[in-house]
Image (cartoon, rainbow, N blue to C red; front, side, top):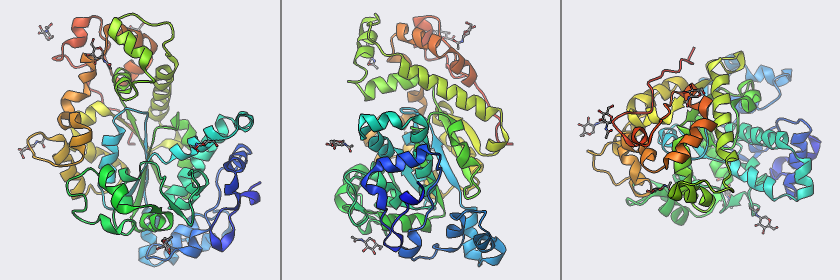
Length: 439
Ligand SMILES: *[C@@H]1O[C@H](CO)[C@@H](O)[C@H](O)[C@H]1NC(C)=O
Ligand SMILES: *[C@@H]1O[C@H](CO)[C@@H](O)[C@H](O)[C@H]1NC(C)=O
Ligand SMILES: *[C@@H]1O[C@H](CO)[C@@H](O)[C@H](O)[C@H]1NC(C)=O
Ligand SMILES: *[C@@H]1O[C@H](CO)[C@@H](O)[C@H](O)[C@H]1NC(C)=O
Ligand SMILES: *[C@@H]1O[C@H](CO)[C@@H](O)[C@H](O)[C@H]1NC(C)=O
Ligand SMILES: *[C@@H]1O[C@H](CO)[C@@H](O)[C@H](O)[C@H]1NC(C)=O
């Protein structure tokens, strides 16, 4: 099966792209990774070759192992061995756009916003007969497969999933491309240099000025930045990432971003009004409609708690690779928390990150940054972290507290027992906690 999924060699085009499904079947048969092999023939650049290609070979293969030995490589190639692979691991409406910016703003980091979207789309769209054959494990396998390829800067691997299918490695359908600084700046987007935005949000100018995305160029830009950070909301539990934390080719650092589930729900109700129609009726009337779907928020809570429990137990496969971060703490003290994040991933915090934080979280600093247009509330991050308390009916809050009881106590979110308690903002519901997981 593995052979069936191999690319066409030098041309670089995947032969099996005619059916994403074939790839998924491969995954279901237990193939964790597809080797990276096409970039070597088509890329040339300062970071290309050496460690990167060695790392993508089977470590068992002694011919390659010799080449992978750092001591045999020139210094600039050895530097590639200290590449960090950062995963911002979270759920929707948990403050991940904000947190992702702390990595996106770093010029040495190649940041990608939710690439697994494409896998899920392709998977969801395969015929129902095939979909039944491809279980959850297959989807998770495909997710891991894509993450590994992206961490090793093979963006062309994504072509298997992007619809419509990219032509000549060019696509206009890269999900949230403008959330990625590197994909809106030179060399990927020659028009995207200093001052290109003219004060507009990246989402507005980048798709217009930058045109379609050349995935070969994007892969090269990835190689030329020292580190890769990926945000995803699609992997349910940290345990699903185990094969990646154990992969000798990666130095994975998982930032598990959590948020009060009551805040998550309030935010989802605002952002996805249609889907949350029944909840909104409940919120407005104080009476629970029969057809409210409690399963989504329940599984969000369960996954969050299970991952946190796993991480805090510090199993050998996760030791030093897991950091639990509450969004509320980040919102309350962004500069200090950002320093902690950078300490955890083992990188220097760049001046760009510092000034982004100052511009976007401090009301006394005038700013024209994009953040203020789209997420105007984020400016006063302290106030917004708990603003859900004014936007959620007590009946809903009480129901969530029952459903998510364990999660709330594990993560240090206090339950309220009256409307007065809920609305009284002088009492924070976020208990001070330190989650000691660095050792
Ligand atoms: C899913 O398939 C339908 C029918 O083939 C197509 O019209 C639609 O664009 C596809 N959606 C995605 C996201 O690929
Ligand atoms: C994409 O970028 C690569 C690398 O610079 C280049 O060789 C290729 O011609 C570009 N593709 C197109 C269609 O412009
Ligand atoms: C916000 O900006 C003001 C004015 O520049 C500065 O005095 C203050 O220390 C800043 N506060 C934070 C939390 O960065
Ligand atoms: C819930 O209802 C209140 C009014 O009772 C409203 O102010 C608030 O915006 C609603 N919240 C959501 C998330 O729709
Ligand atoms: C969870 O339930 C226990 C017992 O039912 C209760 O003592 C505790 O306060 C609850 N915790 C939260 C956060 O609701
Ligand atoms: C809010 O809580 C504070 C501190 O517990 C209390 O002093 C105050 O009276 C409360 N306000 C209202 C309106 O209940």
